[in-house]
Amino acid sequence: MRREASRSMATDATATASPPKRARGSTRILFLLGPAFVAAIAYVDPGNVAANLTAGARFGYLLVWVLVAANAMAVLVQYQSAKLGLVTGRSLPELLGERMRPAARRAFWVQAELVAAATDIAEVIGGAIALNLLFGLPLVVGGVIVGVVSILLLTVQSRRGQRPFETVILALLAIIAIGFLAGLVVSPVSWPDAVGGLLPRFDGSGSVLLAASMLGATVMPHAIYLHSALARDRHGHQSSPRLLGRLLTATRWDVLGALAIAGAVNIAMLLVAAASLGGVKGTDTIEGAHAALSSALGPAIGVIFAIGLLASGLASTSVGSYAGATIMAGLLRIRVPLLLRRVVTLVPAIVILAVGVDPTWALVLSQVFLSLGIPFALVPLMRLTGNRMLMGTHANRLGMRVLGWLVVALIVALNIALIVLTVAPMGG
Image (cartoon, rainbow, N blue to C red; front, side, top):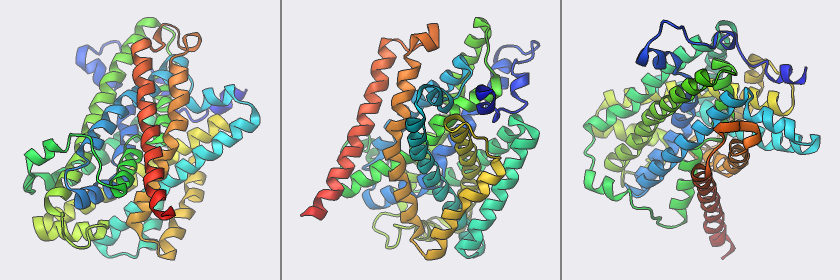
């Protein structure tokens, strides 16, 4: 009964997990794609916009390497999460909930829930900023509208199943890509400087803060928890080695394709900001960056940018609510309806907008908080996917285990550097 309760997030898509036998070759693979594109929304949310635009405007092409490295890490991490769900038939939060004592399980849920809350704040604020840019709506009103629309999107998932939900999210992802890639076409990007930005380096504590923010916005903890459930809910738990092997192959392509798009969008944001916003006053906010982009590249680019930001906020807040419900179901074994959860988690973002906190820096700092939460998701993921008793022949081999733990070590090191370089000047 306990396992059935924790799996209640699965939709009727699970019951029809096996692809039609008439599908052939690439058509069969295409039919299996989708879960990674939903998870990839987390990689192009408004937190990414704030972090990437701020990094490009303040430091030019300096931090291009952070996005490239973070995206490479994300490919490894998201595939591991999806593989865990496919092989075991359980999500990462479910597996953790089964292995932890009650007190530890509840404590782990608290930090995971705080991460999900930070994600939600970024997404609602980003959508509210977009509505303000497009229609001049007050931020609080915009935040409420984003919440209402996200409820409608979640209704598609709860009533129609995962495939229609994936279709809606894919459409929003296309809008996001167009919105943020359009500026790249007309921006005077210095490609030699962009290539030079691939050399890993920092320029003071401010660049480390932004690097951690960019990392937190790219390798997002809630996406790690969620992807295992998305893959499981879409494809079910296959006992046939042949079918499981085919699903894992399709999942590799799914992850690579989704994160290639997300990575291109993120890098484009930074390149546009570096080319068009450097030295321009007021570009440390999304509103200022939008105004500068409209002035430098034309009002049409400004409108397209704002539409992309709105699509980002709407899609990512829906996916974030799905992730939070998955975390709660797995760790607390409590199923809270998605729509009720959406209403409750909307409150902190609306409060932040109402009290007048600078929305762009609220976005950036939320991504730093997410970066600090990454090891709590990554460490158990690498331990579980390397467990031969759990994963059988699909357990990570030595090379993948070494690479995975290296990723964990790099992320922890960046977080330690963030704390030291940011706090040390205050102590002086």
